[in-house]
Image 1 (cartoon, helix red, strand yellow):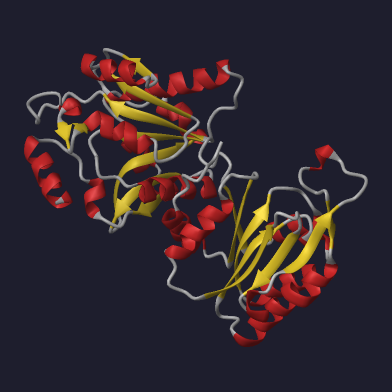
Image 2 (cartoon, rainbow, N blue to C red):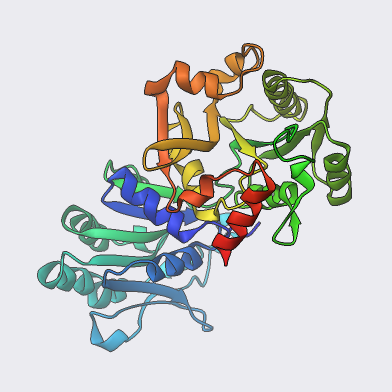
Length: 378
């Protein structure tokens, strides 16, 4: 599966929020690591230096840098002529150390001697790089004295493991990034102030509920479940093959209980571990962005045991993610109460994740609200 869906701006914002010094992007071959890095650089105003390797048609692996010989390419790997192991996952290359000595190491030295304040990009670090001791020492000196954005090949070597485990390094694995989180789309509201079922009201060419489903696709959740009491929503789910749970319960606590019970049951029956967190997505906030939703999820996965929710100017809103430690309480909420009961009960356990635009947190209660948000969209 190609996971180029990861939002570059969300990753950059998350990285800065963590206060880490370096960020490594890893994932399986063809997962879009370099694609993500290139998109990240478009959002960065900082200038940078670059060390880049790639496989040629020869095939050889070559390396180049803007700091060395006008980007001249130097060979760092050639195909093995014997002892090829089909299970070696691309390690059937023999290192050519001269490429590291004449290009990679001088590039790092020049960067540290002239512009250590700049970001240094490495695309990529892998098996060959792990085989050159002098280059390893240069990289670790670079990490000690500058800022690095690197693509890391997804394999285990002593060198790669060592630098990935540094406390100043943030590692983003883009393979199934958000699968540990499940999503419940809340679609059971009675729309009392709206005058009709707002979930099927048109917003910019599709229903509010369909907008919510589209927002849920901003992250590749392990499971997404719509919880509803409305026939119209059920018909949309059936037509678009959306996993849903239909009920006739009157209160919010019952909707939460039913959704959480189904999510946990589905994971148990399929032999999967229960999700690390469950995100509750409202159906009436059509302007939630991909960047904000992914930033919320990245923040949750970073903390692991915190309740995370979107906010604007420290004013908390939705969506909200609850970690597994709160599932029992979600299943036993007081009558008519939703997840907000737990955020008020445990305020010290809540992490607020900022959105850029207050309109992302606006919910639609009346037809005038739709008119106002459409005017905002222009």
